[in-house]
Length: 226
Image 1 (tube, rainbow, N blue to C red):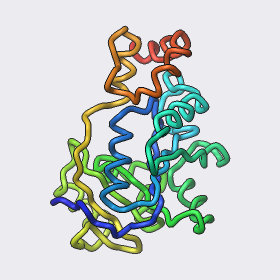
Image 2: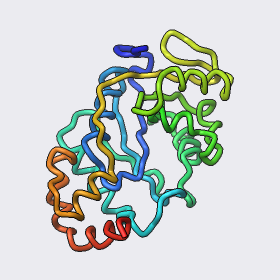
Image 3: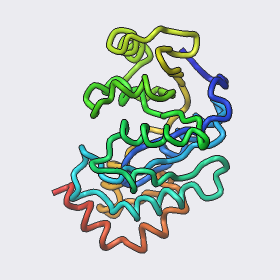
């Protein structure tokens, strides 16, 4: 079920959250695909300030993750970074961030971007099932969770109504099938600390930052492999 070329969110601002530990070209490609296919004015990466489900021992400092994402967005039209969670209470919950953004409708309208695997796992998030009722969403198909599984979850678990472009409840949820790259941050971390090349996996603009902090980063990420 392809949902390409749908401009139901034309002019809106997409929010793509994550730890970005580190940001990679798969993240960049997802943001570009959503912006181009749905006519968004901008897509903002939203690095998590204090993620509740990620081990601190292998997580790059927030300022470094933000710097890497800013470097990745340089020269990419329509992409940017939001540091919204820097100023909110911790741990960083998506529902809290969305509520904060909704207080600034003049900067939006806002659209939350999630992968299909994250979408069907919303019940495990802090108040995650509130999100489809608080903000418009784009669900991007990711390996492991199909349209059929996402559709069943949306209708049965969330009580949403299927539409030609996705689902509708109190908010609109568009389902998007787009070419995406099978790259993960854990893949980049493993290759970086074992001395293998990460060329082609991260944006070129991020290389100098990683190299500047190589000793620190290797020591941090090596803990994950022990």
